[in-house]
Length: 426
Image (cartoon, rainbow, N blue to C red; front, side):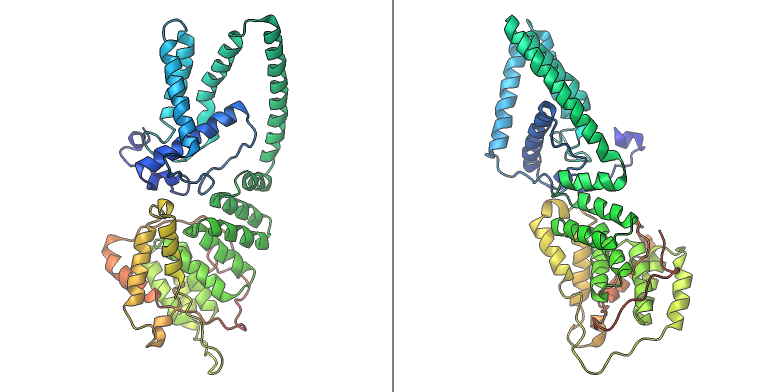
């Protein structure tokens, strides 16, 4: 339906919102069965509500003999039997059970993956028939004493639900309160931690921003937005340049079309006195988005800056990109259900590996030019995607291989200047 509304343009669903998009059909169905049990539990006892169920709050179910899967199968069999027997004498009961299943079928991920693995809003319409089933059950109570007891229980439940509703409404008082509540209800969600990091950034708590993005990346290392924003927060805190560069490298490896990441990288390299490397990044920006407003300003700054001399003594600079692709690739293998569909991760890593393997990395100094791809923006922003023009794909490929050899010295004495007005804004 959405594709028809968009005139044939297929909708894009982020794998982080629904990891079931990238798993085999059997695992999708098994996980959807477990999710249905969670819906039923929340309809019966609405305690533990959450505004987020994205990766990895609901782990993928792979075992057909999982007790939860077997419980759902027995429940379906029982519901089908009751519906069949009640189809004539108690048609209302049959309609309620069948209607519940029909309303959930489209959004259950059984038939096809949708935009989310679970969302409480999807239970709104089925909840009407769930309440109808509860009413039918109360109607079937025959004895007067049992009906009184049922009425008392129902009244107490209504009072409890009213109190829970009032308490739940406090969650929506402001963005920070909402984000904290989201993390509390979904501690295993990478997206929830990223949302809290964004809210903390709005109130100027950059230490909290770094902590939350690191938690998000511990759950989902292949998360380009988290890497990018982590680099920005580290820059605002004037942290170790090696950490900042590493964050931006991961952001670009996971989303090679990210222009803003490259803009921030270029400014970082300029401020660190590495104009040659910044110039290579500016060339990529030009190919990806020729009308970007920062290109002219970056070109002027690159022309004015001279490269810094490295001390002739002391430890050799770290090769920052040595492990980055492998670490992301390890995650791709361990969490293929998500990584396979996230920003063409596999293709990006393959490109970087090809570029890193082409030259002899131990033989010449240029091979260690850091794969730095996104200088820090003092302001946070949402990662954007700009597909490269088809006419420049070959040039982009060559320059990406050049970027794969950029390296940044990790001298303890080198610090990034405070954020200036010229840095990329979102």
